[in-house]
Image (cartoon, rainbow, N blue to C red):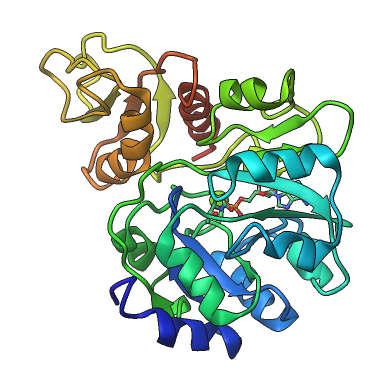
Length: 316
Ligand code: TXA
Ligand code: MG
């Protein structure tokens, strides 16, 4: 149903323990009442998500943060002040009101205020914090349109609010700012450069090997069903297969069975907004392999390359 007119009904579904998919500025989320352990459990079931992968709690307003968790460290408060509402998820101590299933048993909680009016209206109308991962099956492409949610999760969701394509198209940046120097746990729609400008030096731990701190940072993730490799737009012919090409700005020479160009203007923000939609289309094009060209590794381009590397690391 439309994101604006469906809010009252969707809010009551949330309050009574149901699942509502809703647009945010990043990707569509699969929401449940974050105060209700049984509702949160339904998210893990619907996504076939492993229970070790904690959820992000969404609030309607930055002022709701201290009501829920009490005082936060000064650096966290500074980031809230500067970037909320927006595509920045922050790590705070888990308050007692949030059941451990939401945080996969961690004593920390990821939290953000989305910069999408209908999402904030939904959360406000529900009157509860809303736990919401991306509204896709675990490990698969993230949804940037309501159609992606319906195709991926179907009947497992009680209500899908349709707000059209999402503005950023890539997930929020996750930052742990509780220590001396903020640590980026997942590259995302808020560029690292913007964080550095606001709070000085940060460490980037996203993409490091070893025990993942944020399982969106599992080596294999965000994957189409079709095998994806990173590469350049060389000649497509040769193996007789039907291959698809994901280009950044320049259309490759003929020979590819399907081509998606992320931004003919070479604009990284526009490319991020189209990334998952283009991958969904290539995945539906009946090709045997997708070749994806890395984008310039600056700004939100780093998050795009991060998603492409993880898609390429997925075993088929
Ligand atoms: O843009 C977004 O963040 C979207 C929209 C819906 O808000 N949500 C999203 O959720 O991307 P999800 O579940 O796909 O990714 C959440 C990430 C996971 O990688 C998870 O491991 C990490 O957040 N996370 C959650 N709680 C955490 C915690 N306490 N410490 C570290 N990482 C955490
Ligand atoms: Mg996800």
